[in-house]
Length: 55
Image (cartoon, rainbow, N blue to C red; front, side, top):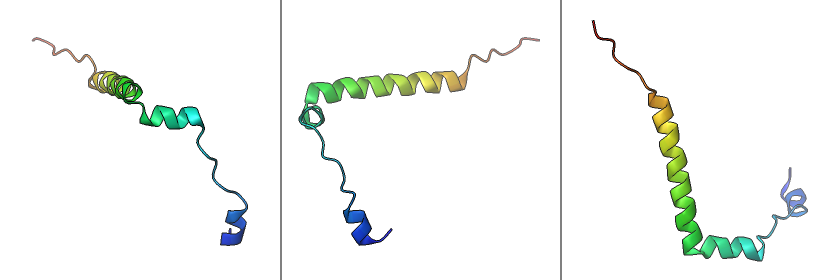
């Protein structure tokens, strides 16, 4: 694709609500907590519940 063709497809502009959420600190803290909980669950699942067998 040439540069002139690319100019025919401009990037979309964020909406007012999107801009608000990007700058809203309580929303960012909430999303941070949710993402960290998801990562923690994924890590705990990857470690599994491996029990050592006693001989």
